[in-house]
Image (tube, rainbow, N blue to C red; front, side):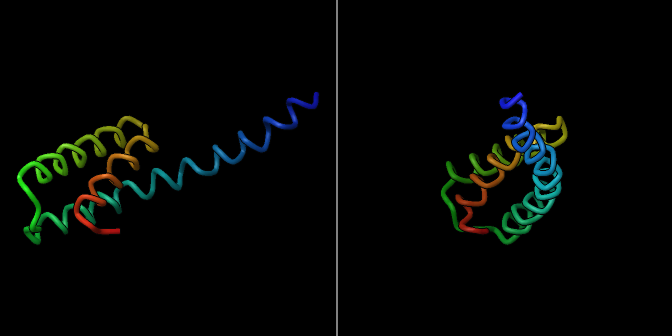
Length: 83
């Protein structure tokens, strides 16, 4: 019984955090899109990686993998030096 009591808070935390990840994905995609529209000064290799991460982040978001989406999108944002 004790192990069930330990799992319950973790399960609740996960259940309540997933919608937060899901909601942040579109906001992050918009930030990346706005930065790309401003023609950032990045290398061709970084630009290719940013576009790859942006597409991967959207695909993961649409398939329900929000933590993977956030990870990809934040990596792209780091390359663009945006928050």
